[in-house]
Image 1 (cartoon, rainbow, N blue to C red):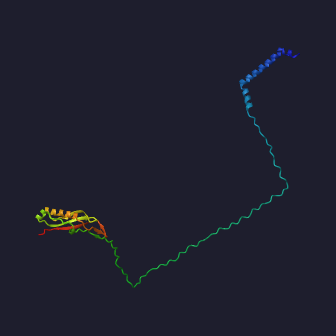
Image 2 (cartoon, rainbow, N blue to C red; image 1 turned 120 degrees about the vertical axis):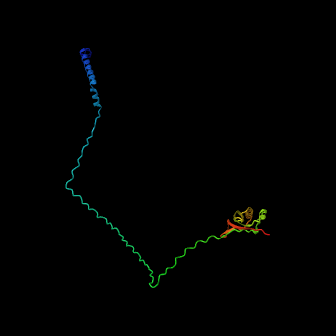
Length: 220
């Protein structure tokens, strides 16, 4: 029988078709039941490989060997002992004290206490001076001359170092009347217009105050 006749046999076609159908059914069942997925997972697992090394045992020691030589430790190095310096305690030099002994036959004399120091000397002061003989003298007013007023006027003044009078006031009036007050004012004006010799402190001119008296008296 040739190949063409085999192809015309319908029973073989049915068998092949049945095998194909059965394989498709099995494949579909495997997909539904998850068997194919397990097969895939099994295939995906890594393959572990191990290299087994051969354990080599050391050779046995040879027999009848001489024992190893014994090592002798070296002698300890010589360390000299530390030097200890002992310092002798310092000896204080002997002190010589002298005590004055008063003879028994001489009496004790107690003198007066020492005088206190003298206080410092005050600065030497020289008061300023006015000389009315060298200045213009005050004159009687008509009312004071008619009333025959007289008396002594005391004036306090302050003189600068150039001899000028900058301040003046009446310390004592010439009398109680109005005419006496006129004499007082005339005396003040004469003192302010006069110049004199300034006062001195330790030989140097200073601004000091002074006092002057002027006597009013009518002359016949």
